[in-house]
Length: 274
Image (cartoon, rainbow, N blue to C red; front, side, top):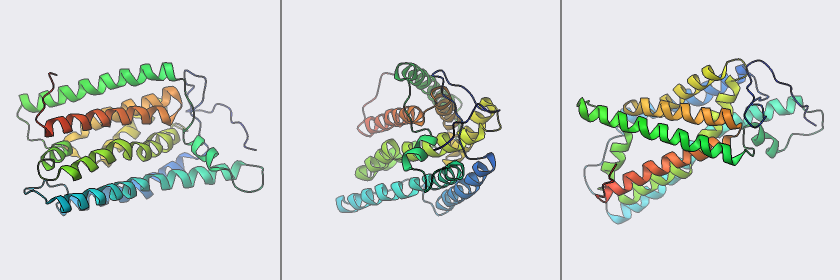
């Protein structure tokens, strides 16, 4: 059986009395960053250099659009799935090193260590709604600043919206992947593994700041760095307060769902009153 760990420096007790303690070390967390984020960022920079983030300038036929949509879903799943490799490997390795039983620990124990555990829903909902309001406010202020000061800033959302005119099926696939695929893998990595690993030796404030900065950088979207950083702060805060990656994942899905819906409405020239 796996021994119960006491509170250690750098860990934080949540409102529900749970500890954000994890079995892997800060050094293993650092290795997880090197082996995951460095190749990920390099790959995204290569795509940008090859023009992979450029908007379409002519319509696709239905068959071309459908094919591209299917490829987009598969590509998103495989690319985002890479975020699961390091967390699963180091969580399993650390748990196996600490168990006194024969054989390896179960997958359930591994995912529980990564924060996929239950949480107090009522209090978590308050944090999720509160953080969603903060995110919405920051997005509005950021958009207002761009318009008011005529900033030459292009975000990935603008590219997706423009592509919606020429390849609607591919755009829907992109939004579906961002809403239902990306949050699962990204939360396990950034909040379940990276943030929790940093808490081994850092204060919650520093762990939240560093994990959020890496989360924003990993998106390779300079025009959206500030909103992405704020979103990262909100997600890490919810993970810390609830002790559950499911909670931060819920906020992540909600945020991406609302963003996707706003893009879809804009594609159909439906303007919201706010």
